[in-house]
Structure formats: C-alpha cells, structure tokens
Amino acid sequence: MHAAASTNARPRLRYFLSILSVIAAGLALRRFGYGVGLPFFAVKYGGSVLWGAMIYLICRLAAPRVRPHITALAAMSAAAAVEFSRLYHTPALDAFRVTTAGALLLGRVFSVWNIVAYAAGISAACLLGALRKRRSLG
Image (cartoon, rainbow, N blue to C red; front, side, top):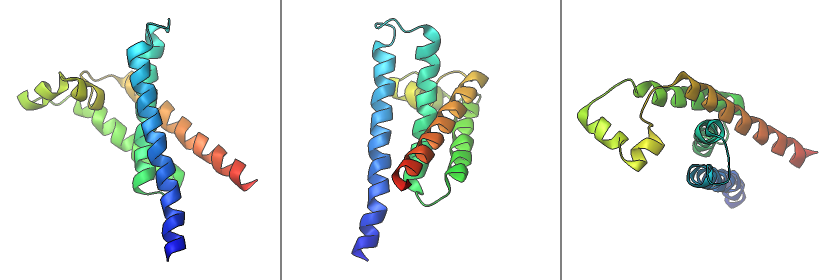
C-alpha cells in the first residue's frame, strides 16, 4: 500500500510544481513582458495561454488518473465558465474584480479571444504531458 501511495504522490507533486512554474511564468510575463520588449499581443494573450495551462494542470492534480483528453475537456469547461462569468455583475463581484487577485483569477471583461487563448494553453499542456509520457515510456 505504501508503494501505491508513493506512486500516486509523484504525479501530484509533478503537477503541483508545474502549476507553480506556470504561475511564476505568468506573473513574470505580466510584470516584465513589456520591459523586455514583448508586444502587447504576447503579454496579453500569453498570460491567458498560461492561465489555461494552469487550469489544465489543476484538473490533472485533482484527478491524475482521468484520461488527459477528458481532463482537457473539464479544464476547457471550467475556463469557459470563468470567462462567461465575466458577463455577470454584482457589487461584491465587481469589487473583487478590481483587485489584483480578482483581475488575475477572474479577469475583468469578457473576451472570446481569451477563450481561444485558454484552449491553446490547455491543448499545449495536454500535448506536453503526452510527449513527456511517451519519452518516459520509450
């Protein structure tokens, strides 16, 4: 039983560390992107791509045994739900959205382009996971 618990802990640790790495990359992009000469498009949508990848990794962390394509569908559903939630307004929710945490977690304004960027990040994370698995098997 101890070996099974250890085997199950490794992927979760890997997903957790990957989530932290993606968060760090997103914060660095947001903080330093323009300073290093990246164009608006790369900073704006690069952050959304990374956010989508983070949602996928969180779903993998929560359910590491679920097939990756099912995880990707769940992540895409969650990401789209968050984006569509931007169309709903209450004073408390709007007050949270103007904070840094609210802007990073929920965003402020609905954009279909964000959904496209989330899909790209989710797809990339899913593909990278499959490539990593293939390399470890072969």
